[in-house]
Length: 120
Figure 1 (cartoon, rainbow, N blue to C red):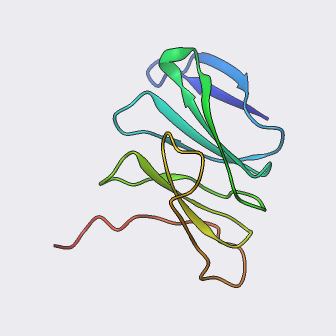
Figure 2 (figure 1 turned 45 degrees about the vertical axis):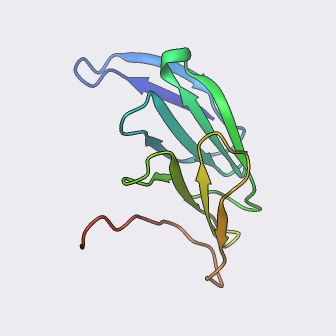
């Protein structure tokens, strides 16, 4: 499956590249670095660097079913979460191939997750 990148202002297609061998469920843009994460039914999460020609700079493996989403932690942007139908949520660090930890609190698949940014 392909990721297609467009210029927001002109709507011109900038880049098309093969990203995963199965359906892509989600992409997440890093808030400050030139990175995009993608998650897929191939059970992989991939990190893409647009300043390096959209090279895949890291692959995160650990889920045993579809990875439904990826979301960066807004307070610690080098970490991100990934819910899966396996059914777990894994927390990862950019640069590390293994998850920091796994949350196994659900009986069925997890479709989405988010970080709470409010409060005191």
